[in-house]
Image (spheres, rainbow, N blue to C red):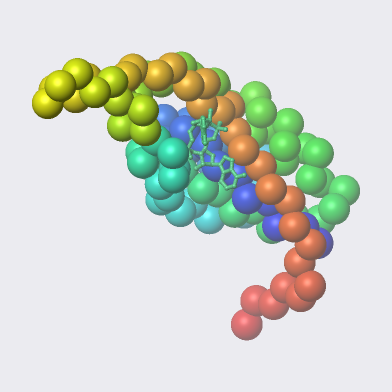
Length: 109
Ligand code: 2BA
């Protein structure tokens, strides 16, 4: 058995979860926060047999869009005397970031 962690955009979370449920997969949705943008995102957990992992990835891929987001970087502001100008930076977020790990043991009690 494998556990799929999929980090998706908040706006895609419910669509991805519904499609997984409609295809018979159990899903747990967690609210998460990206360390770089400090913005909310959604982490989905899907426990699944190894032979279904590719199907799960395909569903996540089809329902997750990539988006450009502009952030006002505070990493390298331009220091003009006592005035700090923030530096807009464009980053491409998603579709989805996926981790797949082995499940040593799975119990429902
Ligand atoms: P964030 O950490 O908020 O990152 C959002 C987007 O900012 C990333 O999109 C990437 O395009 C950019 N980014 C992140 N760190 C950067 C850096 N040090 N310098 C420049 N640009 C940077 P994605 O790669 O699609 O990631 C979306 C979200 O997935 C991330 O949100 C984070 O929550 C998660 N994630 C991505 N890679 C991860 C990893 N290796 N481990 C854990 N979580 C990860």
